[in-house]
Image (tube, rainbow, N blue to C red):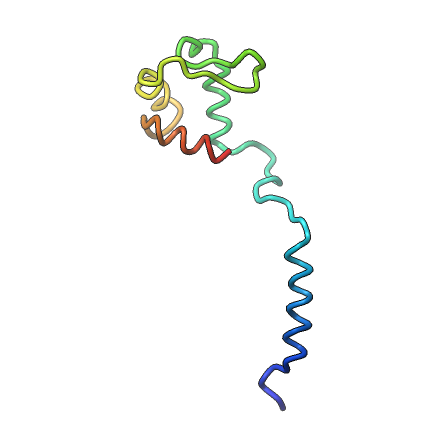
Length: 96
C-alpha cells in the first residue's frame, strides 16, 4: 500500500481546485431574509422625521447627510447603537 500521494494525483487535484476557485460564488450574507442590524438601525435612524435636524436623506434618497456630527454622535448614536463614537460609525458604514 502506497501512503505517499503520487505526483500525477496532486496535479489532477490542483486542476480541479483551480476550476472551483475561478467559479463565481454568492457573497456571504446574501441568503439572509433581512438586512444586517447595522443597516436596519441606520435606516431607521435616517428615516425617522424626528431626527431630520441631525441626519436626513439626500435629495435622491440614495444617500444621507449628517448635519451636525457632534450632536449626532452624542444624541443619536447611543439611542441606536451601543456607543457614541462617530468614527466607529463611519468605519462600519464604509464596510457597506
